[in-house]
Image (cartoon, rainbow, N blue to C red; front, side):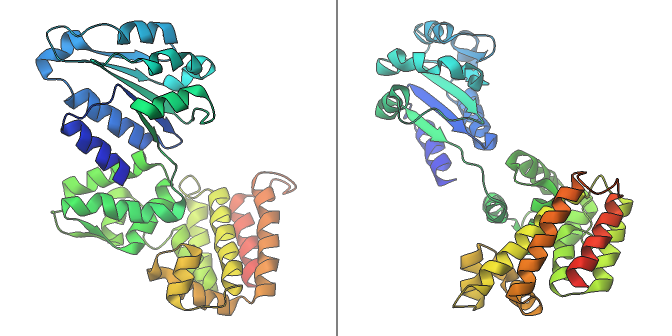
Length: 334
């Protein structure tokens, strides 16, 4: 995020590079940087003759280079943006000769999504000399809540840990999806207000009481009544609560408990740091570890592996997903 801010600041200050090669698994920042260049490098009256958008599936490297070598018309520079540039992956190394001697009056942008160029090859090495190579890495589940907080902070909003976790569990690690929901919330709630689970439930449609986050908590507390209530809700709303996702979350939870059992320092701060979780949830994990000794945790992980296979239709004899989850709860909590 800091690297993105620096890139935008440099562009805002007129410190342009001849090529911006934006690559990686997370498309959100690639789009943000590319859109900023498209909207801000040229004045509106300059864009007609000096800004073009190409698509990787429709052009060759030679076409791109030919356009990049043109001189701007009645402007200091031109902008050429290549979207879906990953479609050129087979021939991308042909860009080397242009990267060695880029047109100084052209800002050439590549949106190379979901892939990376080989850092051992000539193109990457040439780009690093005079241009920008930005790698947009996918965030892990445990990193997204902090990202949400950092995105909201400049606008004066805060979000509770539980509300942030609800968003991650419902939307996953797709930052574009998460950001779209945050933008909707900003339109609804006053600036400076904290986003709570109640606001999430009311405006996005995620239940604050019946979700994987609450199921994990109920399982950790061995609260059978609450766990079965949530499972029954999942059975009534299967599209919003896929069994595969629930099992994956529980598997991750018990894997973390296994890691916790191996720690010498089991203080909340040490647990939060080692498990890479929000300190707000550390005591929940410590309490769960007391309820599930190491041997039991290992047994539960084996059970979850078995049910993961069953949830994908292997050896389950067409058992309904709701019944599968109920059976899983019995196996975990007894």
